[in-house]
Length: 100
Length: 177
Image (cartoon, rainbow over the protein chains, first blue to last red):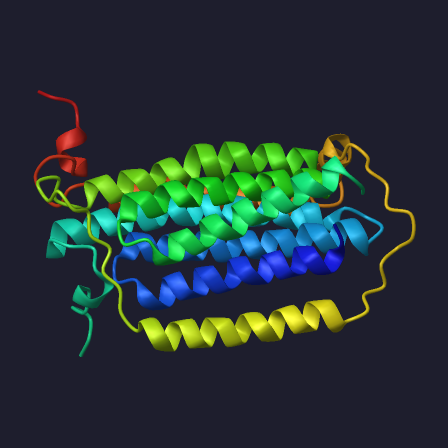
């Protein structure tokens, strides 16, 4: 237990999410990496709020991050379904129709 | 924190980080989604250790119960079911692994070596009532903006996922004559 251990856990989650985003070609897997990164940021907010700050503003911020993540996941799912209907796959490399 | 609490903390940390690593490396995307479930549950357990009881419940409700179901829907709706192997192709393995390991080293070193001004006497108090009061008083404007954002996301997702042309267009939704 301690602030540094929680920050290391947050860093590990962030790096796993970053690796997922960098390597995966399936858009849904990229979305999973984004969710991992948002969770790591949340851990840091709540850990600093618990160990350093005297108010619980960090928890409020984490709640807003969760709200944003939920909205983002819903819109991303809709975009993926549309992409699948248009191109027949959800691989991020195939969505290059806007490229000049 | 001593004894069993310490043990539970390390078990939760191992569950969270181990599942996150599985999300990053598992080749089957359904298995990756299930590993993501355990990672989110571990994060909810960590919130309990940080006296964030309301946030832990919210994490279980929204992430484990909501976002993960959405991700599963996306997985099953965007792969051909006839494909037995729900593939999850990857690339740039070595470059990405190198970058992430270096970044993890830098972040961990910074976190461990920095002397944060930790307040003396950590206390564990229920936070739900305080969060409710703060949301209704000091953070009322962000709260209302978040509700507008959720409404916009709802309408946008419904609009985007509607099939193109034919059924579902606005013209078809008028009263039948």
